[in-house]
Length: 260
Image 1 (tube, rainbow, N blue to C red):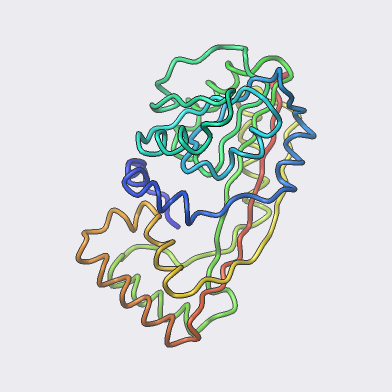
Image 2: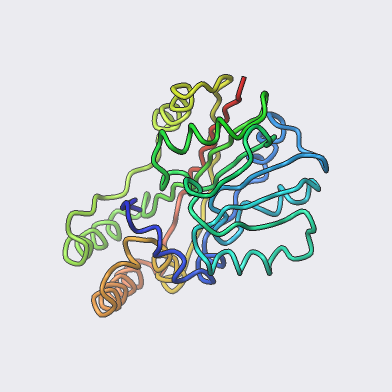
């Protein structure tokens, strides 16, 4: 889905739905992170943009001290409750680029489907300063690609987008070249040992499930309510007309970078 700068606030308006409907991340992704940055009870870890906590539990289970920085007040409250049994867990509410945080103190800093909201230079420079020497930055995101093998449904849906969200671009499958380019960005800011990985999975959603998922995307949330309701109703009708399900092919990309 489109990333529209200035719409970061929209996610927090529907925090519980976001937490329920956005997918978690593959176990193999965490194995790759922990191989690069072995984490234990004495480790200090920072998560940038915790959202609904989709990427938090596997890290907490290492026993580390995990601090999350989250812009949304509803997300902060939700995650404080969700992970209340973990004594090493805490949340700071605010924008990462504005919150004062310890310099040179973090073993691992990671961000799941959130770092793109932060201005590039500001984000990478701050992460670099905060990591201890040898510390690792892990940036990862899920890139859904719907209707890949459903051409008739894709055509019908794109006609609706042309009416209700003109200017939006048709979906494209995330590529290896894009993942490699994103991994190279960290090198501009002093990071070394640049790596990337790609993980794939498939989800099958009913019309109702897909509509609920669309309701967690920033550009869709920002639509005027009446327009959004009509749009979603017609999307639902199109899905029902062409088989009653949407197949989503997810590509999850992981970038790893180390502070020398």
